[in-house]
Image (cartoon, rainbow over all chains, first blue to last red; front, side):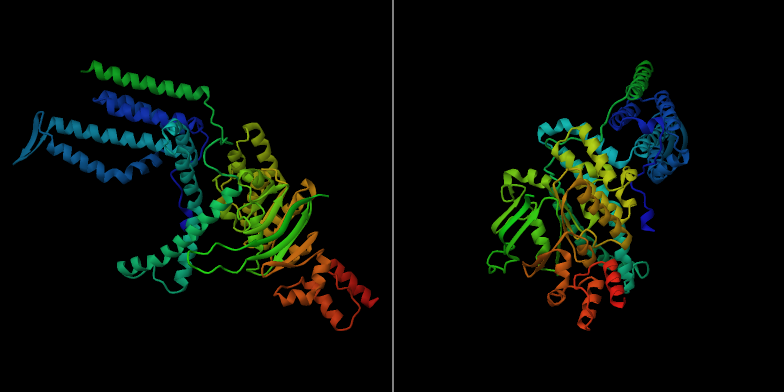
Length: 268
Length: 282
C-alpha cells in the first residue's frame, strides 16, 4: 500500500507545457507570481485568470487535479476571507450588528484575496504537475549556478536533493518491510491507543535509520568508485536546450505582465 | 600476456581506535598476479578477507604494508586515483545502494559526468554500455521500477561506460533471485569474452566459480588455493576443511571415488558428470 504513494505531484504527459524548458518554466512561474501581486484591481486579476486558464488548457491536465490542489488550503482561504470581511472598516456599511459590521470594501477585499490565492495555487501547481521533481532539481541547479561564484554550494544541494528523490521509493519499500517484520513480532502499529502506537513507531524508525546510514555509507563508496569529486569540471548527459517555444512562452507571459501593469496604472 | 594486477606481500589491518591494541591483520601477506583478459573467481568464507582484498584493487583501501599495482598504477599513489578507478571498476553487492540517479541512463552516465566527458561521446558510451547489458530499452525507466537483476545490470553498465580494463565484482549476485543471477552472470561473461575485460568475481557460489578460468581460494587472510577450477575443486577435503562446499557434481564424483569407483576427481559441470557416469556403466 505504501508503494502507491506518488512522489511530488508530477503528472506525466507530452503537452506544450510539459515540453517547455524547465528553467523557463521556473522563471515564468516567478513572473506569474509577481504579476498576481502587482495588479491591485479585479481587472488585473481577470487578466491573470485568463493567462492561468490558457496555461491549464494547454497542459491537458484534468481540471479536477487543480481543484484537488486548492482543497487543502481551503480552510486557510476561508479564514482569510472571513477576517477580511469583518475587519475591514472602510467603505459603505452594508450590514451592522452591535460592533460587527460588513462594508462594501470588506466584501471586495476578501473576494479579491480569495481569487488571488486560488490563481496562485493553480499556477504554481501547474509547474509541479508538468515537471518531474528530478528535472525541477536540475533546472534549479542551473538557474542558481551563478551563485557558485559566491561559494554557495549549488551543486552539492542539487546532488543531495536528487539522491533524496532517488531513495524515496527505496525507503518506502524498506519501511513496508520493517513494518511487516515488526507486526510479525507482535508490534501494534495500526491498533492500540495513540500512545502505544507512537511508542511502537520507534521500533520502525530505529531500524530504518540504521539501514539508511548503512546505505549512505555504501552509496558514498560506490560514488567514489565512479570518480565523484564534487561539481567541478562535471559535464551533463541531460542537456537543456531552449527552443523557440520557450522564448515565445516567456514573451506571452511578459505581454500579460505588461498588460497588468498598464491596466494598474490606467485605473489609478 | 602481461599482468594487469600484481599484488606483492599485501598486509592490511583496519586502523584501531586510540588506545586499542593493534588488531590482527585482515590480510596476511597476499601475493597474487592476474593476467589481462583473465576471468578469476575469488572464493572464501565470510570474514576471510576477500572483500578487503577487492577494495585494495581500486584504491578504496590502501595497503598497510606491501604493494598493489593495477595496470602499472600503484594504488597508494593518490595523484593517480581517478586514473586507477577508471581502469578498475567496482560493482557491489546491493544494487540499490550504488545507483545514484532516478533515471537509468543518467545513472550509467554518472561516472562520465564526473570525468567531464563531452556530451556526444558520453551519449554514445552510455548507449553502448546499456546495450552491452541488454538494458537499452529501459534507459528512461526509474531504478525503482526494475527487478534486482536489472538494477545490478544497470550498475554494471555504469562501470562499463568508464571503459575499464578490469572489473571487480563483490558478490554481485548475493541479493538476487535465480533469474536475476543468471542474467547478471551472462552479462559478466559476455563482457569478458567480447570486450576482453579482466574480471575478478568475488563469490560464495561454487557454480559461479566453476565457470571461471581460474579460482583463488582464500582463508584467514591468505590465499590457500589458486588454480583452474577443475584442480581446485578436486581438493574436496581441503575445501571442506576451510568450510567451503564444492559444486554438487564434484561432490558426487568424490563420493563415488571414495566408494571405489574409477571416476575423475576433476568434474565441475553436469555434462562432464553425466559423461563420466555413463562411462562407468559402459
